Amino acid sequence: MSVTKKNPDSSRRSFIATAAVAASAALVGLKSHSARAAGENLPHLSESDPLAKSLGYQMTAQNVDKSKFPTYKPGERCADCRFFQGTAGEKSGFGGCQIFAGYSVSADGWCASFNARS
Ligand code: SF4
Image (cartoon, rainbow, N blue to C red; front, side, top):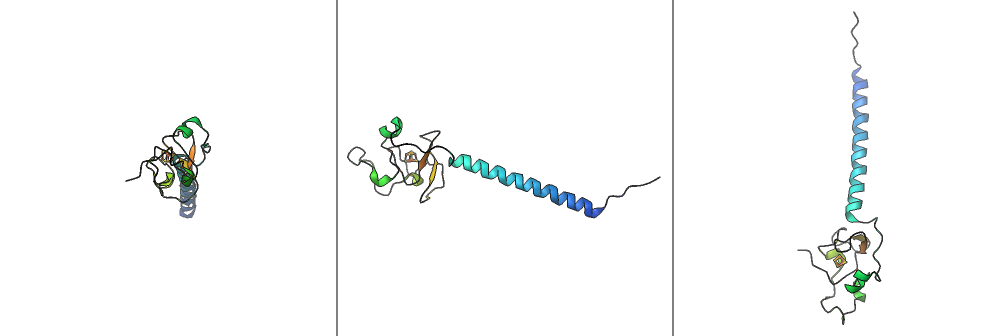
């Protein structure tokens, strides 16, 4: 009768390889999920989009027409709005917006639906 013994080094190597593959897959999944959640891969919202136009969306908040949108206050930016799905407070770049589903908005932008994060 022969008894097959497993080589402990082989088992350890196999475990480490499996753990490394699992960790890599988890990281790829997290990156993919966070990118989707942030909306960074979505097309940029155009200022000429009908809804964007009606809400006075500007990619640069300083360009807001204050005579048409008097609620705008200097310093308000998409990155500080509760509807922004990118990184809160970011200085540049784009992120999703709950108001403009399917598009990303400029972190430095603004529209009349601005609602400050609390
Ligand atoms: S709702 Fe907020 S994040 Fe979206 S475009 Fe308007 S100001 Fe920017």
